[in-house]
Image 1 (tube, rainbow, N blue to C red):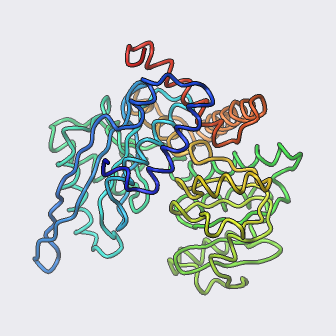
Image 2 (image 1 turned 90 degrees about the vertical axis):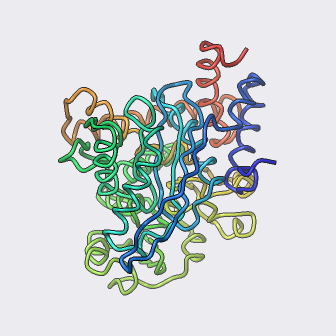
Image 3 (image 1 turned 90 degrees about the horizontal axis):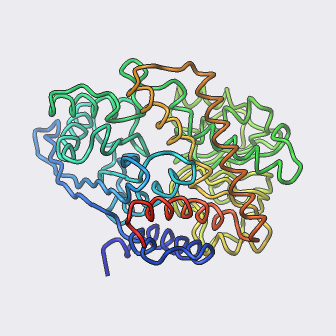
Length: 418
């Protein structure tokens, strides 16, 4: 047994891979290659803390598959980070990039650390040290990291600078999700959340419903959930509940999202938000809404709690928020689940846009970015839903099948499967 196999997330990814592979009769050699990452790197990340003591954190970069192009995937700083989780997320990135028809392979990275427990100087030192340790793998033509849980545009700016100092070259395309001032793309910060809303819009249309007036509950109010709530509210949806680590808040007629955002900016947590009722995380997951969008961490809806879910549609804004077993049971109940590799693809789509702009040194305005993002998300949904209708399979299996068909063809043409 490999260390990856001990990760629940990795197990879920492998189960979906096998299921979708059987649906399309995936070439067995291609399947075997896709079960394991191409390359993994485990590094020690020593940091001199502000008290002058050295603390060593574990860091990881996993490169899963590059049949379609350079490796691409986020970097997360979180206490739960481990090699199995990172390998599972890297595999999902391969499938996501293939599904979205991007010329990119899949990778993921992370450091096992609580970034909120570090000072700014400690966090910068951690980022720069980690970057130097993985510098042999990354580059704008090789492997392009991006922000994920616990990282942001500042993290990417530090990575860009550390990599440039290490190599002697300033190639802004080495990372994406950077500030606009150092080669970032407009619309990148909001891209994943906006993609969630564009997919929710398409999912509702399957049931002849409009986004305007539809009720939504969003679990997680970070980089993904907050931007999803802002756009959904702007487009006329009723965002009745949102949550963060401090708890969840609710209003039956829809929260005043600009007011909630202002409260977050002033207080950093949802607790104490005015004009809202406090509810539990479990109550949010069990709300009878048109759309439930889990936009935080993986594994929040499992076989132990899926029975409380009443939402008609689930749009997976996070990576792996609904386990395989829970997804199967909810689908039997008639819940329409749009899987993560499609639903939260907005971030990597605009990361791709940023990479293209960096390489060409030609940048687009926000309207261009948003229009291109919406087009790709809607088109990808239509392809997956069409496969689902034609073959009578769930959206999760269909998304994987569409992704695997493209990967299989590329691997065969390159001689990686026969």
